[in-house]
Image (cartoon, rainbow over all chains, first blue to last red; front, side, top):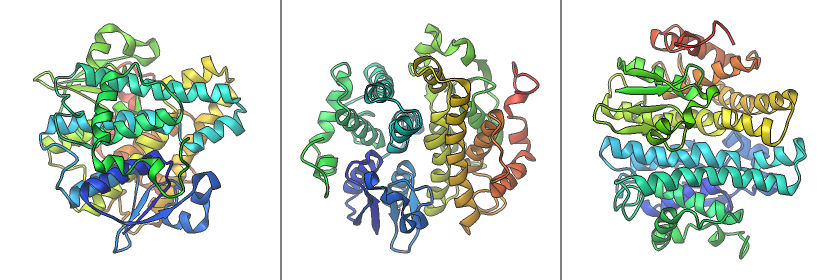
Length: 216
Length: 216
């Protein structure tokens, strides 16, 4: 199995945590987004969307989109599971995940930041304002739900790690990268700290991957 | 069951198709995004993220995020199913869905268009260019995958309707709303046309909902 990813990619980070939880260690293939390696012909053949991560099975099947990959891993390696068994709980986990993966992260990925800089010619302050605006919108939505719901436990959904925790942690690390203050989000911070004590999360941290700098 | 939605919302459109496929007819509650009804206190209490759609069960549980709602409907009403049974096929359906729901649609929703207009003060031409850029990026990704994959059949994944077709149709209708020419995407168009012959899709069309104009 090959895992095409990059240290800084938050979507790759999510899948890396899921792989660690499942105890799966694929060969890691680096795709440097800042060098545009996702646009090389080799990678385009693999994933025409030119986004990472992608996971290639031993049989050569190519999986893409971080949420779809995590659902796949849960389908084929159900223990330990990333989704609870009760339908309403599953829906809440997927919805919290969606706040990150659908509503927040897509607005701050490299291709969008490039458009803001090169097409709209926004200066750095305006670009940072954009990034903080959408990261914070996601954090407000997460904090509000997590602080108000009686479903919240040690983790987002009760006392077991789920896909929602993986997405939450990726979002929090993204906020750190872009220097967004997390003080207004105490429930988020508590859960993120609890997650980061787990090996599967800690070892997956972007700054611990090959090619990563000591800090951003 | 209550379904909070709005005729023009593409995420609501997706859930409406899924409900039709499952033969479920909830009470429809209109939330007019252009009037800002998603920001009223009543709706905020229901969905603090102030986004639609939301689905409220007879027991009062509130579900949000279109993908999570569709997965829930598939969990509790599995027939007819929106996902195939084979894990790789499920992953492909979810990944194609993600191209729409995570990578494309979040970049053109009302709150983003409002930011472009009021915060970045882009004129209409620049806003339309933004919208077309991201809608087309999604269409290119979908067309490339659908045209190249041997998994593609009458529908996105073989010859049965899946969540991917629902997302594809919502994206195509979104492109129509914003006058993006779909001629470069023949495989997409073929599948969309096939879908729109099905009652579940045709009856869910945004322009056939209460409050919708005759055309956009």
